[in-house]
Image (cartoon, helix red, strand yellow):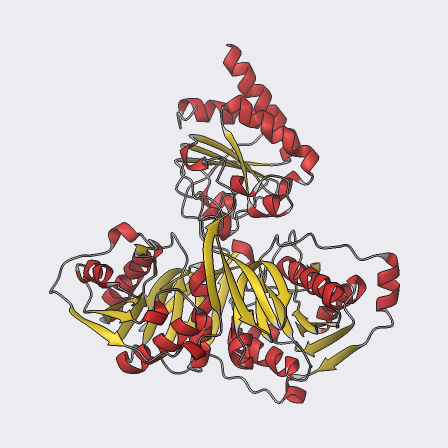
Length: 328
Length: 256
């Protein structure tokens, strides 16, 4: 059995989620005896391929072409189709990045196969691999198995595996460059400039305390409640995506997969249900407090302290309590 | 510009979910349903493009009878027609199976653009738009935050991770998955709701569409995830719980 891990880089910089997926593949390989082939796609990616060769994998492939210098869904799909036909993997693993979401399901479909996306875990049971993913915004988990013929495609959510626990060493892997055949007219998307909106005004990654609000705050007129709490505790105000989508707080205060990833010493999640897209941005925090009316909200999965109740009563009480304790 | 927008009806955000033992789907009785929030952004974008460039918006939904409510909401907001792919066992379909049904229904339409939301709040596969593009043989782009259409081409602002964006261009016809937050979805007006009653909703079945599906994956069971972290729940009145929390943060966690 063979697992092909497709890593991700942009302009020679790793997307670190690649190493988490390699860790997932190493776990699956230990369970099943599979060998791992690690691939890197782009132009001039030799140095990155060398880094992969230091890991405990059987084979490293550099997939190089001028037309792969900039990501396009057509270019990546056509190239990987050829690599898969050659390498004949049973499983193809990806990090669940925005880029992978954009092309990997297309690649699987082009081969008449399916993809289990956004997995948070992997188990080996009765001789088969069970992929665990979340449903209903994290309120339930699902055990999913592949049906039909290989290759089987899967992607892994950021943070589901430890990238720093990828095993190194072992016998040096065989390394090769795969020549792929691509023509400019096959690529229908024209990639233009990559840019950042106005400079990020707040760097939440440096804040030792963060008070974050979610949908539970209900109305923008209620935000001062959270602001007062943030002031009383000496923290920065932040939010989950829906609050920024509504324009109630600027986008640069958003925590989660499309915003900033933070790990403060104290993170207070107020009226945030804890969808995975938010949790990946804050679960590394040292101490997490959740205040939510729904005792089953997934945010309590990652919280150290929780208060189940009405935030409109609890937050002012908490602010008062903090102010009182300062005076003493 | 003729646009097909895919909409899904999902359990309401605050619906209590009951899972029958060993089941792969929730018990549907006694809970409310709503238009999948990400699809609301795709619908709004479709309506705005139509208002700017002319043409019609067709709202397409796959699911049981109740899914028609999502189509009706789209009609009330301004879509011209609805297509309902009726399927009581929609939850047994994998992403590819659902996409094949939707693609077959889309192929019966004259369209320039297909829009989907980024993902559904129930299954959350997040693949439908990309699969539709491949099945229809069309270019696509995902996580779209701005659409400029001119001369049969689209200029699109894609969201990348960690605050980065990218402009991309592609020719029509095409499939786009819309990022939540791209616009402010409108509310249906009373006039719109009344007008929607006269609009057509065509109903098709998988057999009508001639689609056969072979599952590529199977949900064995769904369940409430086991806690990996021990959460200390602080109880009492708001004041008592707040006092306990401050105490814990000061003397136990020592973070304030």
